[in-house]
Length: 168
Image (cartoon, rainbow, N blue to C red; front, side, top):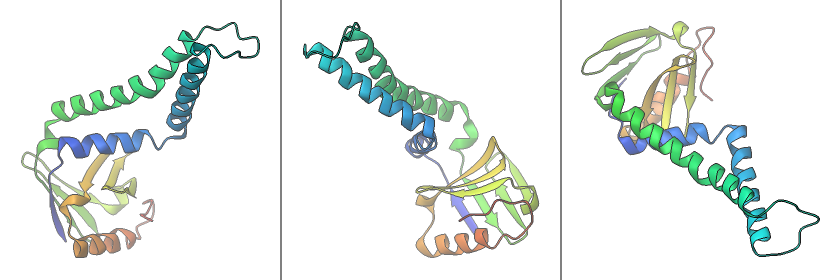
């Protein structure tokens, strides 16, 4: 089975947000930021808070950093990474067989036996095939029809080579 894909900047940014904000620490930081903003708003409104020596501005600033600046940083870094990594702009053909994954872009090609694949993961908008913990192939689902999607899932779930962390 062969799938032709091309990732857009918007898809890449959405993927980076999904990967970043599924980590428990990021969820905790976001909640902490929102709570700090609420606490700062309560102090700013002049409501008495049990012996609070803190003014309203430190929690407001800290909460703003966590809830606004942190997501903006993810957005900015994903846009920058997409612009710098030119292979992300290429049309890429992925050929899936029971034995291997063949990847061919406009300026590169590679073949990977399933035994050399670190992990396979399915997200809402992407399949991610990890060659190593920090080297991935991104396959957007927007380029895959419904029947191809089911066929691809069957191939990826059928990978039985030892060592591959299977989809599902």
